[in-house]
Image 1 (cartoon, rainbow, N blue to C red):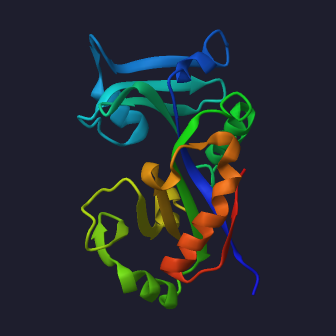
Image 2: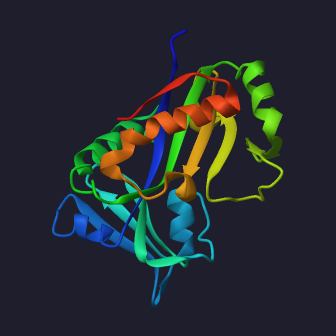
Image 3: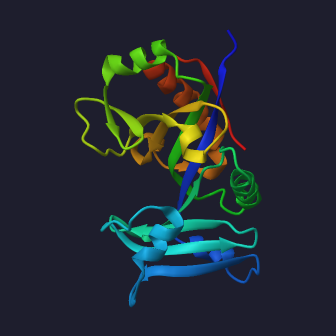
Length: 224
């Protein structure tokens, strides 16, 4: 049977010099939201629909000439590193296309930086097959929060630094005309183990095996 296509929907990249990639370039500007003497949490909520958590010690917004706005953050656990989030690379809007083009343009510049999060998405027209949900529930317990169902092992708390699995309606999230539901595997720092951007495709086989283990699905991961 031909493998199902899975796509990289989000990538978080960590660097000690992330801002420098955008200096002296008229296509970019950076807005400070949280730093020494600056605290505008409402701006963060306005742009990203999320609150600034306590572990974020510095927050900035990268503005691009195409109208994109990307979060750049420093966390308390690693204050010398900035993390930029490319979230929504494979949605159903023009923003996803622009975001993919931006990341593609930056790949050569940031090839030696580290990936600290990779979201792999599998979309289904209509409902996610019952056999997939049943497989997910063999090792994990589902719980629903807002419009998303998370699948957690008994040993996990609400958050972990290795793997999260969740499902949600992509149709509702992006107000699409047809029913599309998404199964998403979120691979985190402890799973990725100092994965550099240039080596991203080397991680695909390992992730494909993990996806099969928990969902039963044979997938082939596609990137950009």
